[in-house]
Length: 139
Ligand SMILES: [Cu+2]
Image (cartoon, rainbow, N blue to C red; front, side):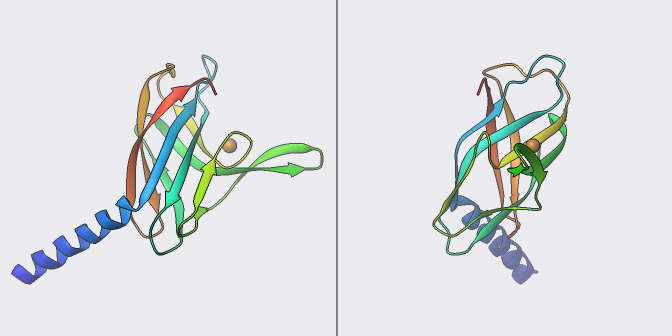
């Protein structure tokens, strides 16, 4: 029994250790016009661990659906495209920003209010989870 508990605790601490090596900066969500139920989340994610990571899923209570998106040229137009994951290589920083990689948010339950924050969980391919508050801004 004791060894089972130790194994569980070790598993937990390993996960927490991994999580602390991911740093999120300036997480924010674009204020969208009243009535709009979609928005986009931007942030910088730094990977200080010794392995490449991928952001694979995002969850939050305030909206029904989250997708990882990129922007790319299609003919002469910039279009959004869904991607399976967003890569953050070891010792590198990936920036999610307007006109580039972003987290798309659908079915927002209540109107967004500038200055308020909503909690999201960022889930990585090694199963580590980062919980962060995204602030609603006009960007
Ligand atoms: Cu998008």
